[in-house]
Image: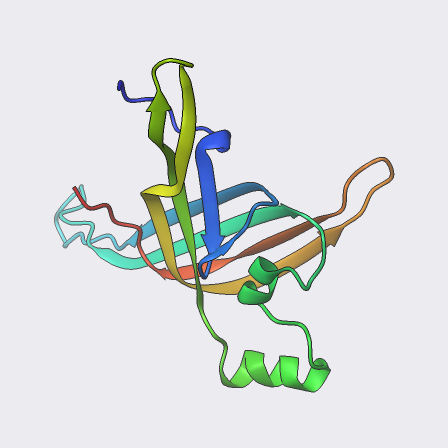
Length: 161
C-alpha cells in the first residue's frame, strides 16, 4: 500500500495509556537555544553550540468532565485545594502523551472494505515526562465547552527506524 498523509481520522491519542478521544487538536514544539561564540578580531560567529532544549505542548479537548480518565492523568483536581497545592509543590506525577496512526489489519477484497483496524498500529510520537503549565476552560454561547491544557515535556521526541 502506498504511503499516505497522516490525518486526524487516523490519529489515536493516549495520555498515560488512557484513550483521549475528545481532543480537538494537539501540537508540540521543540526549540534549541544556542549561544554565540565569537572571539576578538572575528567579524562572524565561530560556533553556535546548543545550550538548552525546550519542549512544549498544547492540547484542546471538547470538555466532558474534569473526571475523564485522560484529564485526571494530566492533573488530578479531586481531593481539595490543600492536597492539590501539596501535589504541585511536593511531588507532581509526570505523564506521557502518545500519538498513534491507526492501521488496517484486515482488508476484505470481496467487499473492498477495511474490516479490522489496530488503533495503536504505528507510533508516530511520544511526549515523555509531561508537566502542566496552564489550563483554560472555555464555554461560549452557541459553542461546546473546551478545556485547553499546555505544558512542557522533558525529553525530545526521537524516531526509531
